[in-house]
Length: 271
Ligand code: KIV
Image (cartoon, rainbow, N blue to C red; front, side, top):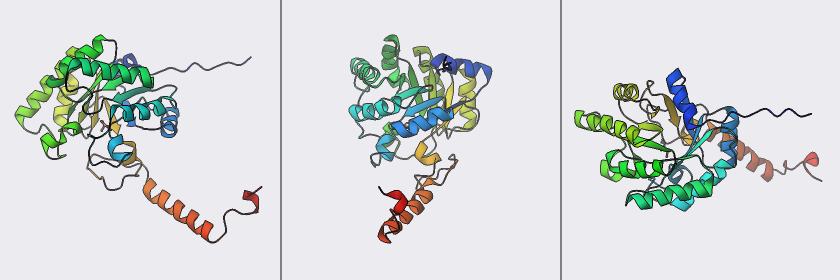
């Protein structure tokens, strides 16, 4: 008789309980089946299929060019690698800003075609009607405030947001509006740690920080940054856990040398 171990899946309710119980939430980005399988098996709570795919997978300078269909392709690949964690799919630029009907249609397309569990949208008050409409259709929404990369041409730079009183006040208001509209969590990107603490304490839904200090209810990093694949990007908030760029470079150079010197394949590596 085979005893199958029941897998306890992470849901949006699990995340609320984690916040209430003081357990920190771990989130990482992934864009394909292989890495998603490794992260899920390692025990990550949330995988974000981020529109950072536009940068790290496609090589664009910003997140703006990636399309809804390209996000869906990445999310489908990630979902096939996941057994346990919650999958959040970024709604790309242009898929929700024009009106709430378009926003809902985009969110439904993501949910139907990918098998993902939720969507993420950038913005506060400006996005509230769309958040409300999508949540009303039964689709969990994660918000995203602070440095919102889809608005990079409005901001002009990737520096820390909400250092001034006015912007901090708007961010606090936006966080409450997102919670009221039914968002299940909010990403806080690159804002002062003291502000992130205040926002996290004012909400009953979890905050997930990136460059927002240790008082957020969870943390997220882009996989290429934390694994040391993307060596150009070295912001103060980033901790790198591997130096994969260097390790891959060494391995590939060794492979090239083995092929050129006819060392590879040897007798044992052929039929
Ligand atoms: O697209 C992304 O990777 C993100 C994270 C930086 C939160 O939105």
